[in-house]
Length: 490
Ligand SMILES: *[C@@H]1O[C@H](CO)[C@@H](O)[C@H](O)[C@H]1NC(C)=O
Ligand SMILES: *[C@@H]1O[C@H](CO)[C@@H](O)[C@H](O)[C@H]1NC(C)=O
Ligand SMILES: *[C@@H]1O[C@H](CO)[C@@H](O)[C@H](O)[C@H]1NC(C)=O
Image 1 (cartoon, rainbow, N blue to C red):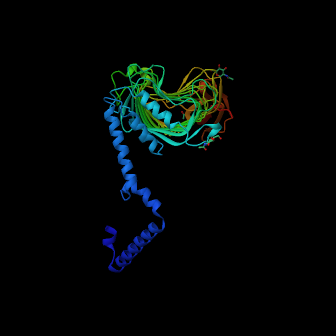
Image 2 (image 1 turned 45 degrees about the horizontal axis):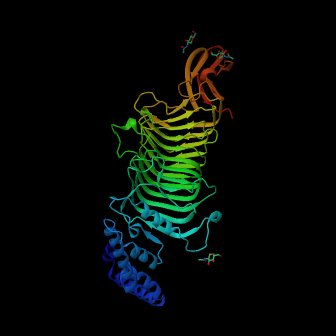
Image 3 (image 1 turned 90 degrees about the horizontal axis):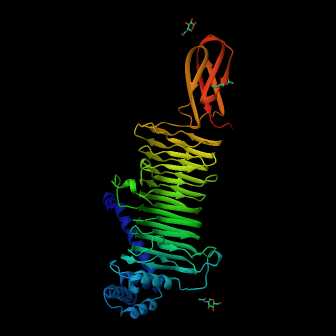
């Protein structure tokens, strides 16, 4: 509008003409494009009566089922009639009599909706013969449902399917070793689920069991969940490939930090026991361990962990894949809680922020650290002398380990490469790197220069033991010695 007013008279006229031409073109296209397109939109706009009425009827049926869930189940057959009359593959759980107030158990009703969604629209299949459910959706209608037992997807398997838009709450009878939603076909081998989407869900585990488990599944999308009150894991992935967990909040207790009960937080926010998964833009606000990784080739980015402070025995991200870690973490916020990696082999940590003495702990199992990059991170501690990267145990094999270019305030910077210089008068110069180098007594490479004014003494590198570089001259001189060291030897 401002643009129009700002134009001169001539340009305004031209613009008006263009607008009229555009409108005419639109009308012509609409007429030529056929009634089909208009009819389809009619359901929304009300231009064509039939879809509009069907929508109203369905909504009325859903209301009836909501009402009936408080009393008689008489409307059940009518509801089933509605569900089949529509060719829609959206299965509304309230059409199945699920009580959206959360007052009564809805397990059977939701399971029936899932079973119907798994009835096959065609013979199409996905990877390895997984039945293609054609985009079927189980819609939770914005309700809260009490469940006495897990909603386990049918063991016959299926893909191209969604559950979304509502809340599930475990009842006091819910088994403590199960999950509210289970993509699990029991003990049978092979892949059973593919492209299953769980979206816009709040899962309250009532301190009994966990939120979601994804077993032997392909390309699962978990998006915008709030998982709370878990006794075991918020989300657990086992086997399979490519479970993508995004935009999700997990916490055993609802807190925004400084909870007086923090010392007793237990459970794990996300457990990745498989390969090729991704966790991004996730917050773990209370749990004993934020993310536990026991599989390779997983990517973790944009994760904020303030689950249980390292000082209270918690861990932000635990990489328990000694010998072949294959994990890269970027852009994370480790808030008073640390990253622990056992025998890291192929590990990358960068672009992350560590607050409140949070750090990276390398834990020796067989004492191997190979192909590790911890670079370009920011650390902000409390002046208690905590190292930004800390060793737990002794490492015998150290190859291609780069801990460099991190910046810290109130913490000790540790690195695998360093430089230093010392002034002196005599025949021996010592530059002590013991406080900055990460690995004790390990210097793989040294470069030094000796600056001594007009003198030309003979000089040599004498000793690097204990991460102390000693340079000696053959006669007493006044000199400055500059040294560069690297803990890698290649
Ligand atoms: C699926 O395959 C079976 C067996 O070949 C056939 O009888 C049936 O008509 C097919 N169904 C559809 C929907 O194509
Ligand atoms: C270094 O020591 C020598 C011999 O003791 C002395 O003559 C000289 O002044 C000293 N130089 C400096 C810079 O201290
Ligand atoms: C290097 O220094 C250590 C510690 O002072 C000593 O034990 C060792 O013998 C020295 N090595 C050489 C080659 O001088």
